[in-house]
Length: 182
Image (cartoon, rainbow, N blue to C red):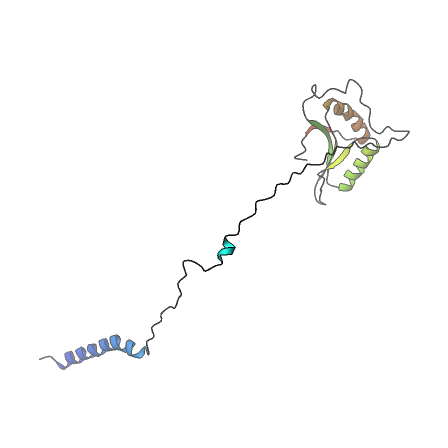
């Protein structure tokens, strides 16, 4: 026969195993089964057939012509003491075919102080030069480039280099003008 200790161990194991298996189901409470309620999507909506068969109107074609506008030349007033622009001699006025194709400009300098750049441009314009500050939409902390031109004749600008140096004290650089990067 089995000893009392063995019987107690077997009995304890049976009770523990019943407790592990049965007690969670008993203590879980009322079991509810959840079933999702859903509605099926109909394959075809019931809609007004008159609305769906309304024809779409064809787009209208309208012919429009661009207005014929011509570029007006701006002429500056010449004072008695100074000419409006520097006259170009016949040797410096050359055809665009003799110069390299494209436009040219003289860059006089790059200024951090925009007031100095504006003063220089004003001085140059008073002497009849076509001076500008680049870029046009300059911000307060940007550098201001002072240029003269553009002009299609490279030789005309080369002849102005010495006049500009004596007038401003700046040695200008002749550069190719590119309107897309200016």
